[in-house]
Length: 433
Ligand code: SAJ
Image 1 (cartoon, protein in one colour):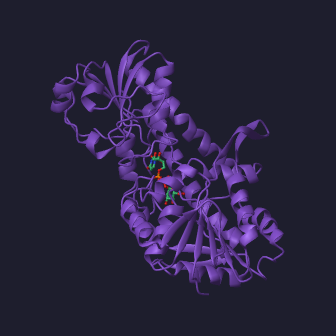
Image 2: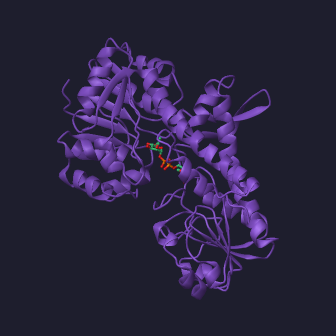
Image 3: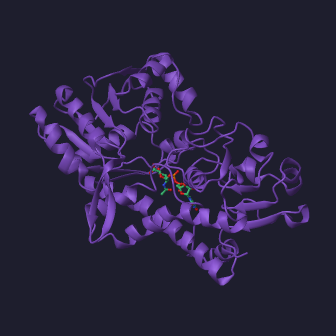
């Protein structure tokens, strides 16, 4: 199949890099978003998302005219849906006393509705948004068939998940293996023709529900691995063991790869996707549910460690270092570090939070613009994110910047340095004091 025009619905962390990459490979792309501010920004030739390499790619695509933006889809050969699939804030499921989150699929449904008037025979529609199993068949097919066309017969339909790592999106988009699940083999083949335009990694064809499940399995596997690391950190504290040392030794086994414990699991993927299994099969997803519970409880566990280190937190000045959801990114969404800062505030602590990648911080958390301001009159210092810049702090440097002599390290960023020599008492997650 040949593509003379592509329409990408949703110009966020996935849609915009994808649209820019197709444009860079010589295919005219119309990018669609329901947020007028996003469209205005892009029309000015600017970019609303921080991601290495994205500015240059999107600006070049916009400047060349290969990428244009619009409020609504226009006729095209292929439509790619890359809109968010968050949770409902106000609706939960419940079975056997377990409460679980529910996916809010309204953005996917309305993107599909918007395609209906411009869908033509021979077109290809691809869903990229992470979705509960069977979404392509059960949600998309009925909506798209309102066009009078039959899915799989008159138009091609496929599911192809993005699997790129924030911070590496532009490179991984091209280099990663890509699975394309068609509702028919012909649909999968049409999807291959589309992504082969820029994907250098292996392209694997399958059916739509398999591809949906693959995406959820990858992130669920990682969530469960981190959950066991977090549980090991609790066990290590109980048994007087250094979890970091124990994990690094266990990982010397050729078939063991335990991830790292920390203050919790955040971001828009790993902490979200496992719930899509729980929601669609609450009677079966027991281990998945348990892992989510362990990881969601981890910010509370981190708070307990800070209390152990600093005593009552009421009126205590706490320097909270790092707010991002993981090291060396500026993304503060669904961040366990930010959750810990909230819990500290609830306990009556006077929090001064510093996030090097976003000095303006987050509303609702008392943020300061510099490391010096966070440290200058602190009673205790808590390392919440293993940013390179924060990890690099030395005992001598920190001793000169703060009167605090109590440190809490949630991410093993400050291991192996002579903190005691500089007068500090350090408490580390997963290490009994
Ligand atoms: N985390 C730990 N311990 C670890 C690793 C991570 O506590 O050992 C925490 C991080 O601090 C963060 C959270 O887990 O809060 C998630 O971070 P991450 O780096 O594991 O993953 P994401 O959310 O940035 O990206 C993941 C990736 N999925 C997998 O690695 C299987 C990425 O490839 C996906 O494209 C992305 O989810 C997505 O969009 O689904």
